[in-house]
Length: 411
Image (cartoon, rainbow, N blue to C red):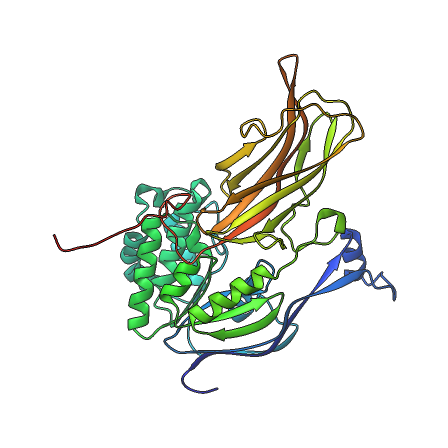
């Protein structure tokens, strides 16, 4: 491998066996399956090649299920490839999954020593780095509490502080920074700048295209296990948007989907009306689960009316992955449908809106409710029925963008 290369990946494949039933996995493990094939194969990576040079900051982008996290786990040795080779020149520090390598019963300081030991450092070396780690994490007295009591933000602060203060030559980060607050993220990206000036290599996966655009020298675009291209941030972000526009997602009636539909959704209600189909469309009419910030989208749901209902209310809402209700509306608020419906009817409801939410992952809930003699009734409600990814190359503070116009002039 060239002396200027930090990571070299050639013809990388990762194939998973998907079992319909847990007992099928057990039978194969025990050699009881006979010749019958009890699984389906899914290729998470399909012959991917990539070369990352020393001192580069490289971003990896793509839709959910494109293989981004899988390739990072193979590079760091967490997963073994099915086929292909990976060569790494340099000490890697990785922040892949929140809390990976942490003992939930240990306090923060004990976990610092645990992680440092796992990375090959002596107690003396960890002692020398401890003040820098605690200063960067900035979680105060919580460092003496069991990490199981930490918020997700405190968790990632400590984990990232450990990752960057063990003097790595290669830093690999998978979406972890999206957990911290905006000030901590700014602190981390400032550290990225310091690392780049020191000639260190950074590889990170993020849905935050503004960060990808600002900090990356080069970007690699993956889609459904294939490497679609690599190039400048602008070129690859534009290509990513084209992928999203052309992406067609099947509805639940189509059985298979891209992972955006929740297989364990919470539903309840009297079933006087039933939501039988739902999907998201972009402004071009493509069925998608990802929307480009600033564009419009339409949430559709098809409802079968199984009993006479005097005045049904059709609703949808959006929350973030922390469970915070961001926005939502219904036909009563909008005063768009105030009629009775009869048994046997079928209604197609569509909610069209501009998406000015910050880039990130969101969950959609749907419902059909109403009032009977002033009593509120839930006919069918689906919580967190599907996910929606908002793709943004410019985020602001908070949940949504005010689309401010800013001028700076001589006073």
